[in-house]
Amino acid sequence: MRIKRIFWSGLFSLALIVSPFIAKPSFALTFDPSFGVTLASNTPSANSSVTITATQPEGDEVFKSVKFIIPAGWNFASGSSFAQDAVMGTGTFSHTLPGFGTITSTLTIKNDLNTMGHKTHWKLIFSISGYPDIVLDSFGDGDISTGYIFTVGRTMLLPIGAPANLTVTLNGMVDTIPVLTNPTIQGDYTWGAEYTSPSSVVVTKSQTLSIPGTVTPTGTNVTASFNNGSSVTFSDVSIGGVTTIASSTNPPPEGTGQFQLSGGLYYDFNTTATTACPCTVTIPYDPVATTDPKIYHLEGGIWVDSTTFVDTVNHTVTGVVSSFSFFAPGQPNNTAEWLSPVKAFKDQGDQLFNLNKNQALPLNLIVKDSNGNVFQPLGLKVELRATGSTTSTPVTSVSPVLSEEGEHLKAKINLKDWGLTTGEYFLRVIIEGTNTTLAPDVHFTIS
Image 1 (cartoon, rainbow, N blue to C red):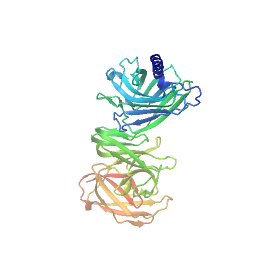
Image 2 (tube, one colour):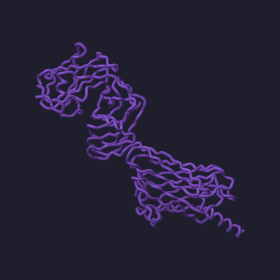
Image 3 (cartoon, one colour):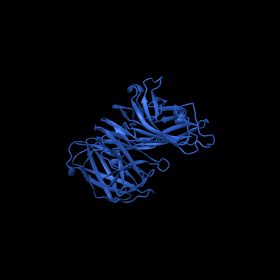
Image 4 (tube, helix red, strand yellow):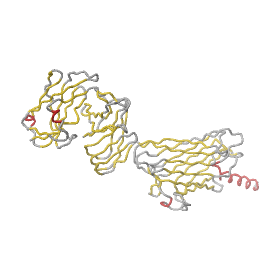
């Protein structure tokens, strides 16, 4: 009996040496290992643990080697950051072994300071009570900008087969030192596993992990970027946090009003940071469906054209706002055009024109629908903004009486009614009922 136990112990120990990377029985016909990755936390910059799984059905060849591919954005600490034999992770491995049935071993991953020229060298230690530990080597290379590759493999093979299940959890922190760090930028990141069978069949599997937010540090003119081309630039961030973006095909209660939605999505930004505006927002638009892209911002239940720039190469539209609510890329169903005297003022370009605070300012304009027909809107809302900023809170607003004269519309505002002080102002006119804004805003001085 002692000789038999020694024999089986030796065979079993030899089997354990290669159990994670074993050959199929000769009758196996398939090779189709699965690959799964889950994060304990998908918060950007979190030191989250990562669990990797590989499952193979009965009759599969069990992989003899694997190359794990981690995309750029994640950061792994070098092996020299940790003590010798520091526990980097744990797991289990189960498989079938002729004469033994299903065998399950525990897995402990320990750091080895002898990196042999690699960024990391880990020892994968498989343990079953009463038998010697079996050790496999895993080497990792790469960096945050190119991504990482971790390889594990053995050449000795025994007839140990599927079903087989491998589960490994890598610790996010070891002894208060980060092992791996999530990306700082929101996006979808694809992890991969390249399995090789004993008969040299190669199968690549992948899984996408999503980081829903972007780290927003303290500072001025801080930009939070997102993987769909969207971004938000805060003029000031006094307390850092995480900024997230949400998109939906479902409109807010106000709907789209009088503009054609581009790309079919509404956008909403949220942040845990303490921020200040004016803020610059950029979102993508559909260049095929949208020939005149605008960015619309929901302000007080009214969609306002906040466009300041259109990037026709990257197909994004940018606007400057003083607050946050829903945004939508779109194309106006209506157009508005200034007539003189405002048109004459605007034709001066960047040159400011001057108004006396006691005078009246005539407003003459033409409003047309999407077919180019002139029509009468519900009214006008005129806003004045001070301090030389298009995004400052309006110092005053008024809805003047609107009348028709031929094909154009007329209104008049009396500046003296607003009690304005001297300084620079922006004039913005919202065409009520159309969600069309005359922009860029008229810029002038009051004396």
